[in-house]
Length: 107
Image (cartoon, rainbow, N blue to C red; front, side):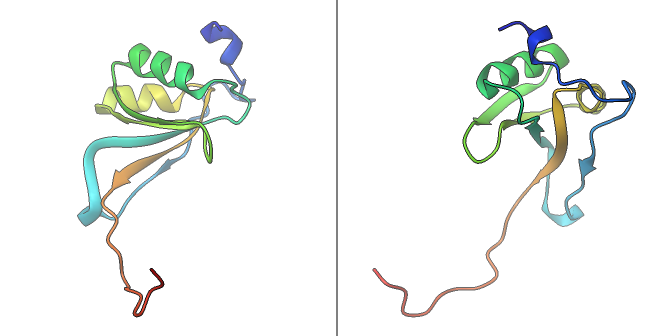
């Protein structure tokens, strides 16, 4: 599959994918979760292409619940990735802290 076959055109070619910001105290600096358009058939290939194209470091890919990947990106790579029509949205990676525990949980 070529990168041209994976493009899902936006109406405005200069429209940037939304960037969802994490709370400052929970941000993992320089790491992002990139969610791809559902129309892409192979998120693994798309993730590899996009990370390489924009100079990011691919950390993990997902194909089931969402199509996307985690990557380490500098600011320039982040902004370029936001302009790519294959990207639905980007979220800052963050540390998740559980807020409750379950007593007498079944085993």
